[in-house]
Image 1: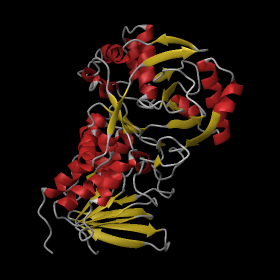
Image 2: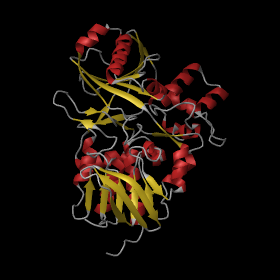
Image 3: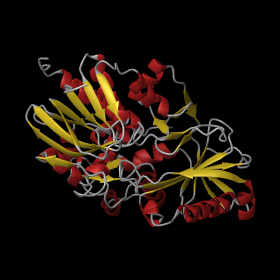
Length: 430
């Protein structure tokens, strides 16, 4: 297929959602993806030795997640709710954390969005917040956002504070998140749409009404170009921030002002996540457990199932501290922390452990981080990203969706939004 109406860069959730929406509306689309697979930061591993699909990237549906649920319903993909009980643990002693979300909402509602934006760290230093409230706010920012309290925008946290009133419902894709992106790709009409895998985009050269994209297919190694009237850019924020010349970096000519502002005003989250499979689920009835002092401050079981699987999670500063460890050293830290937290011997854990998996998104040159958060003063830059650039470039991806930043639902919504913006323009004569 030659000369499509739209080029979509990236075959993750945002890119495939944009392509599917455009294709369903009768528009021609070519999707360029650098990886040899679809999904982007959705990385579901199916291994017959494991009792359930492994999610090495995105894992949960947070709250309503309407865009994800809509696709799951249309595709017939089951969604299951998981318990949301959080406890503090140390040396096997359990201390209930109470209703964490309501407590957190009380702290974040103290942020006055009418005042100049500051970091959460600055806000906590200037206002009367109890010790437990401070600890909870830090745990939330470093865990959920995988962010640094000295960098994250207080205004961005305040914008969602009203939703933190009572328990927060969370869900999983019962058969793995891959089903979402697989359904999107499977529904593309081959007469109007194609997905080219292993095609690394190197340059986006554009003017109003025309885009020329240079890319390098892995199969040949020779640079090629493709042109269209529009382009949807769904590159992760970490890639957009990459210096020119580094692996995965993309050159824009000219560099849009909105993109330049977003690179300066938005921050990249970093995480270390390990999924461990044991011989049996020996940890009683636990959902989410938190360790104040460990390298991995958050753990969760494979609920709602009773599978012998535990996930270790470190975000923000804790992830930074683990960044230089190789995988065996990382596993050693995780097992040591879990043994102390559960109050069991390390020898018992070593005997129980059967397998484990991880993926380092920070060192992955095609992601350069896990997801995104808003830096101090960065909210206007994020909003600007969601607007068309001279009716030619359209930005999508979780970083561009203020209400659901950092989530699959946000990525899907952003891709659909970019497609709707394109559909409002007049089709090019063929």
